Image (cartoon, rainbow, N blue to C red):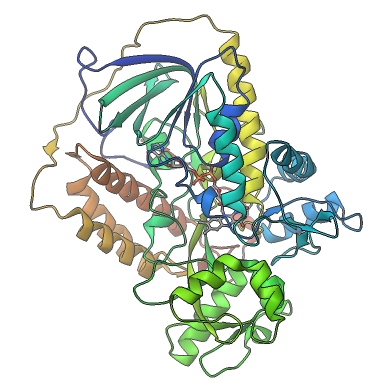
Length: 540
Ligand SMILES: Cc1cc2nc3c(=O)[nH]c(=O)nc-3n(C[C@H](O)[C@H](O)[C@H](O)COP(=O)(O)OP(=O)(O)OC[C@H]3O[C@@H](n4cnc5c(N)ncnc54)[C@H](O)[C@@H]3O)c2cc1C
């Protein structure tokens, strides 16, 4: 199928005069300091210079919030083939078999590497402790600090990269756009509050900006997940695909006024039960795998049961499980619940689904190469072919490690082979007639809330043609007057990125006239074998 096309409102979000902006030259630029970006930076040859730019504090990423763990075969009774089969089964006909095989085969080695870097995983009887999550046929999820795996992994990775002499870490540095010249990526335009805009010219660039959960009203993602990477890549002419596949996590703590904490799959893995507001265990009505069905099935089941019972949430029940085990395995979740007066061992926990993981994104090949020469990408910003139409739990930290390493290695090899060139490339683009963004009548917070609600209502867990068309018209309307404006700070750029990413998601969700994996169409409830293919997208 030929790719869908969309027209971004601008090629570059800001105007610039190259004679008035500082220029910096580096061998490799890594954008994003989550698991994928840091793993990439660590792979670059020490003879080369690396700039690692992240828009917030380095510890603020989806990676740091990961709870359940990272999947890899360590149990002698398990097998690489089982891990591959489970991944493919979850992916509903859309996984790239070679990528799956490559990633799951590397998993134990990548996890051991983390241990060598100082990450401490939980142990049982002197061995790595393994738990089981939805969709996995065996216990193969390695975890740390009970249920704060990401925090521990990122502590070790951040520590390692801080000690790497050839890497410069630039936090609070927002990447506005990728710089392109004659169809190749040449670095990026970045901004920070101290220095304003800077051109970072790089021999090779690696995009690792993570996900897009913040498009939705209900999400597990921290504030950084605003689809900047997907949008900047699209503006630069890079192909994206599968933008309709947003995974919703079934069990997000639902307490008015609290931020939406994820209640890890592992809670169900250890025996947690879902009950509706009448106390009925309902998963048996939806899947023979009960609470351990894949996420898309559990999310749909919860949504339907909420509709049936006309109640705003369902409840997770672990009151029948061993209290000490709950305290040991889920210290973080127990603590969060306590803050709201809930005792995990005695009370039912109110939960409902929330946007969690962006499956689609920048198309990459087996070597983490995008369709734009000199631009690599890794992690949640990409579509690598690993997850298909539905990500298997705990496969995404793994994907970040495997493709981060590849991106770092290839970018490093390519940069080593290239002589230095300390001059700027001429950038050709037609600056659009812009509207200044200091207009006080534009309330960005209000626009974001409206976008979040629209996306949740019409592009959320269940979609249909009518709702998608309403969302398209609404988002296009906002983008018509927000897109062409010129903002001078991240809040405005993020909103512009989210509007563009929402347009992409709506277009792809409209084009996929079937239900597959995480994409549910109430007007096309069946999967159609003719549509088991990627929906690609490029800028026109
Ligand atoms: C609550 C929660 C629990 C999870 N649990 C698990 C789990 O148990 N197992 C698992 O495998 N996965 C889990 N996931 C998913 C997993 O954490 C992510 O998919 C993965 O960490 C993504 O890594 P990443 O490096 O691609 O992106 P991130 O870790 O999100 O990093 C993105 C980086 O890019 C930076 N960035 C973004 N935009 C810009 C910009 N414009 N300029 C500069 N920098 C920018 C950010 O600041 C950040 O440093 C969970 C996710 C969440 C939210």
